[in-house]
Image 1: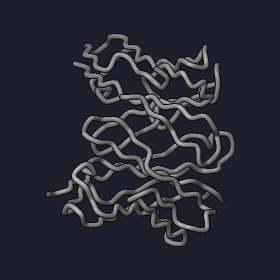
Image 2: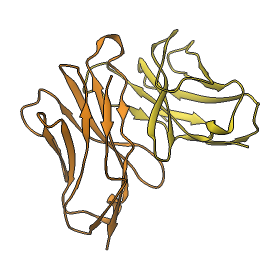
Image 3: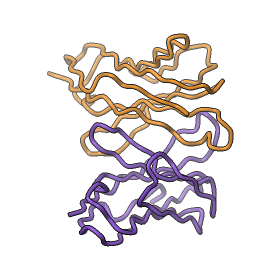
Image 4: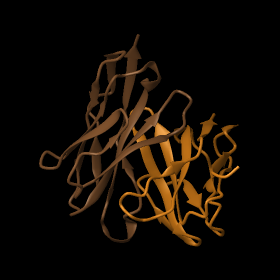
Length: 114
Length: 117
């Protein structure tokens, strides 16, 4: 099916382990984003990308790494997971950089770090 | 930089009544766009409505309308004739016209709306 998919949807890991959250979109959208959602904080931008091999830090990038070797994929890696990274992670994409271009979101990945 | 403030952590409304969810913003960008998203308990993010800063009229989409007051920097969402299915978290967001990074959205903390039967 066309759209934006995230995997895994649920993940439990331990402190210090590396975790990669996958994001794949079939629209060939240029722009992709990773947000985390925490109670009381809304959605906060972690990293974003305008095209393959172009990435930028968002509001809360520390502890995260991204790559974008292909337009359709935008994986997010937690190199050494910490309990503060327990959150729901949303990947999103957008076709245009115009002001009105809405973001299309994946279903979210719920990560628990023990 | 943009900032979105949603001052109502939770709101209650009776079914069939109208409700206004508040959103104020701060930006130095000359042009910008404002968005509202809905997040039901199932977790997905649903785009509701968009308002451009230079749009002459307030945006409407079905039962949703955006009460845009540029001088007050507010972009309140009005839901008319509330339905039980409107119970959800609502997020206000904006995108500014600030150079090369104008494609990212900044979100508020959200308002949890509960519609009572």
